[in-house]
Image 1 (cartoon, each protein chain N blue to C red):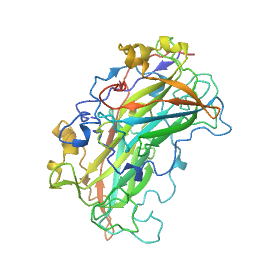
Image 2: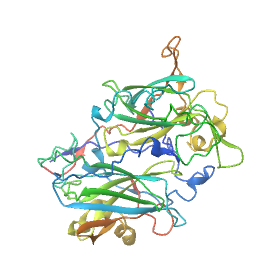
Image 3: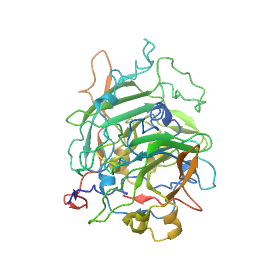
Image 4: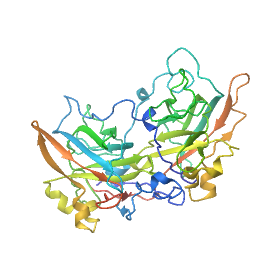
Length: 239
Length: 189
């Protein structure tokens, strides 16, 4: 008999609801029926494991990974952080995928028609892995804020998107982080969809002078917490 | 420590997530029956969602997951990882080329019917949604603990994809309805 050590439930006090009317696109895309609770099995406690070959050298340098030989325009940033679980245990060797707008607030994407310049030396996508201590690091430029059509004069605060897997199917997380002191932060319905003030604050990176490198780039720190494991296992069937 | 809040993938996720195709899970050397899995994602007005992303995670043809926590004595298949990701196109269509998974054990000596674990992301979804795809014609569907936890039988049946033949190949169709009539069962796992 195999023992299943399940993951803690999704913390709905931390995560936004599916439906948040201030974010217009959620209105027709939010599931409205009650979620069906189901017990975790081998299917949920396992998940994809990406080897170090998932990240190529240079993937973590968004200032140069456009491959043009040139460097992206903008304020150079070093972003570091740790990926932890709810019990503060590091999540090692997990893939982080990154995407963002350029310094002028425009995505290298056909859907983005904002009248701001594209930067030929900036794609705005990268990836990195956490090390044994759960630490990650990538280099980029600070994204610009940009307008969107959610409501009149709507602007997204500067943010960087991150996608993480963690050790199982249920530790998956896609999120965004923001920059301290951005005046657009309280006006952003995507961020204000997070139900608690503390939760919203956890999506704001902190300026890290110890990471800042002289004559080179500013440092920011953003730690990420994934679902942790329950203390008690249960019999999971099988042999 | 508290979980980091989820946020939407937004409209531009293809830049970081679906630029490289990862929806072909099976190669010529993969063990098991090759299947195509496809479906469309719809919103609450029945309109296709062209900016959604579907990820799948599944056991191999023997019913074993390629993960250290799966300690079953079943063979691993070196040419099958079991994970895939597909964006949707203008018609809301996603698709995967994979193999039909074998059955994996469930809680307390029960067996689970063969299934594929699914995660759905989209612009407009602040949190991703979990569901499962089961296979039509499996008697184990009648005793699967997750299926039985869905009280409404019509909604339960909607998690079972039916087999079609196309050019001699097995195709399973599974549409995802985010909201409204026929809303897909999403799981709180």
